[in-house]
Amino acid sequence: MRILFSSTPAHGHLLPQLPLARAFRERGDEVAVLTAAGLAPVLAPEGIELLPAGPMPDVLLAEVANRTGVDVAGDPTPEGVAEFFAGVRIDLGGDEALAAAKGWAPDLIVSEVCDYIGPLVAADLDVPLATLAYGPALPPEFADGLAATAASRYASRGLTPRPASWYLDTCPDGMQWDNWQAPEGRLPMRSEPHRGAPTTPANTGNGEAGEAGGAGKAGAAARTGVPQVLVTFGTVFSAPEVLNPVLRELAAAGYDLRVTLGLTASASDFDVDSEHVTFLGFTPLDELLRDIDLVVAHGGAGTTFGTLAAGIPMVIAPQGADQFMQADRVSAAGAGLALVSGTPTPEGVAKSAAAVLADPSFAAGARVIAAQIAAMPAPAEVAEQLATALAAS
Image (cartoon, rainbow, N blue to C red; front, side, top):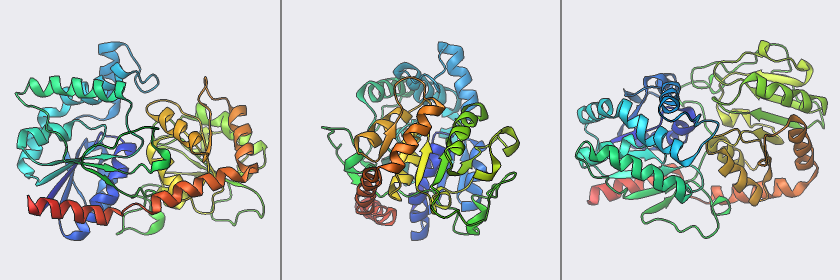
């Protein structure tokens, strides 16, 4: 079979789809990903074909700001979110995506929950659609706005939205909203921390820098008894001016820090005690989590669920996008602390880190969520379920 994955052009949206894409490929199916050309460095080491269509987020964000005056990354209002994911993205990349997908002729389209290009293609080609959700369900005020905006773009092309036949849900029960009703066609699927491509050595990441940048303890054994803390604000929100004050507070507390640099920063951009800090370029999350006692993060869904799958507690300082949702759910599950009232301060982050490390109940809460995730069907099982259903249709 030919399985086409469709993704918003951002690491946090694409990486959660890779375990299922790998599972289909290991079955012998042909797999491709429909997204912007800028994600080629992620897909090339995987050996997964890229169907390039549409611009990267910087162009999309600029167009949303031009149309609405809203910085949707920092102020994710329902209207701005709908315009970004289901308005501007279709306007600037929809036709290119339709042409590319038609030439590839998929048997199934798997579209991440914030992607509205995949459903557009499914409606145009009359191909079965599966939606992959990588966090708690979107609140109705966001989901309804996205659906309405997408429907208007589909209608302009003479298309009617095709309902997804399957909802691939990586959110364990302990992280879902209270009183949430599972949609028809829900298939639970185990979330996994992002791993390097199977064909590349484990320490190379996805073909990008994974070694330490600048001075630090890279490769050295951690100091006995000192908490090991991973600080990662993802690929979009890891600006040095945001991280630097946080790192200084955490280093002053005596923790050993492992810090991701995002895609553009370097170790020289930071002014911190290098004895306590190791800076890392883009590295698969499962490598970053080894021997870690606590993760301090922005609350991206991939980082959050990958961390909890490993049973590690968290401190979340959300910066924008959907990160407030993950922060709320981590706190509610007792798997960490979230700084969600006002702008998170470096002092608040350090105080929360100390509280989580001192109270074993947070680690216990993270292990409860890890056990729930481990009990969910693996991506390989879900791939088999979908293939069986397609063969029978």
